[in-house]
Length: 170
Length: 306
Image (cartoon, rainbow over all chains, first blue to last red; front, side, top):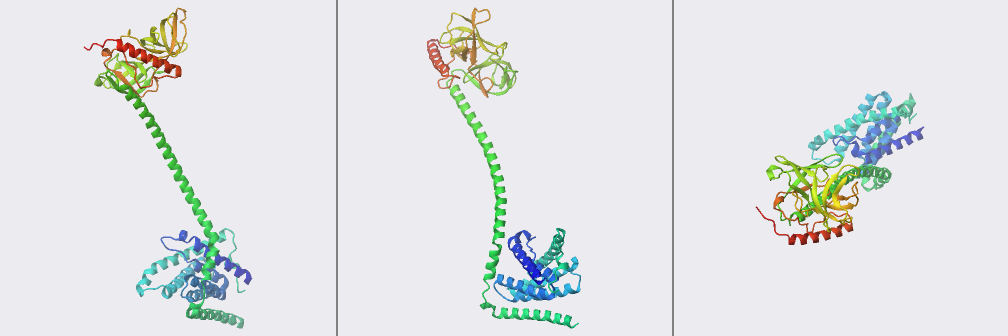
């Protein structure tokens, strides 16, 4: 089961990296892009629980850090915390609920984005943060709307409901 | 209960482990080479990237193809316009060559319409009283006679063409000098015919037919056509000669009205303009005709001017 879950995680991750790398411009709306890594992390953490979410988040964060080639460990930590929190939420709430997904995606993206901004983006105090905040909020909203839409779409085309069937920890 | 607690503890341990690793990486990660991750990503994305580029190229090729198609259509139109302009230029050149050496006063007119069924009987041309056009004035083209003005309006006129059966022109054949009347006959084999030529007169196919000095309406020596076929009238007493018009009656765009027909003596053939000749024989006869007409014109006394 864990093997299947890991395989699924790898597929999701690769899909997210490919879509982000190739169709990033196509997905942009008024300069706002969805955070696809966070999107994958949220669904993965909901499906896999706190441990899977933490480890998956850590791995994704490492990849993001490596891409940025500076501040190695920052995004790994952020993603790990987000994965843990989402995993916990998924355990106690109805994870198939679209509103929950929407909320987790929004908060998750905002959390990771803010952390990334504070820790990595060189800024001259509070001003740059305020300047970047609308873009970050837009990205969080975009990701929050895109996630449930994708989840619904994948179920409509006949793919199994991953949040019901995949439980890495079971 | 204890397994649940153990599970929770394990979760926290995993989280703390990840965070500690993160902090360690942040602190000492400068020495860790992670450059291979982006490189691996590039390698992973390469097929998808190539596919995307291919699709983009395909889309742009389609657009470019469409653009080129439009460009070709535009160029085709432009080419057609240029060809038309070239043909018009050539025609006007010939017209100028024709008009320049005229001693007579000729006024150009544009053909506004061609009327008559099943063959052209008349032209509507630009110019009327405003340009001094009068009924009866000869209308010519560089190749030869076309007809005469049959009605004049304020700024337009009607021209009865040679193909109008009502129009008869006194003519003679060059070089034999055989005289007759050219008229269009609509019956049997509709064509221009030279009537009333005695059987004793020698006429050959390709001979030039010009207006004769006996004409009271047209200046003498004006090319009318070429002998196309020889025959006899139904009685067998006279020749009945089919004449091919010298001027392309249905294709003209500009014509000239000879406004001082009465002042004109023998009509001079254009020195350089091509007299409409469909064959080498026609062309040879036309040269002969020019020589004959030039000689006769030289011998003739200058016309008297009122």
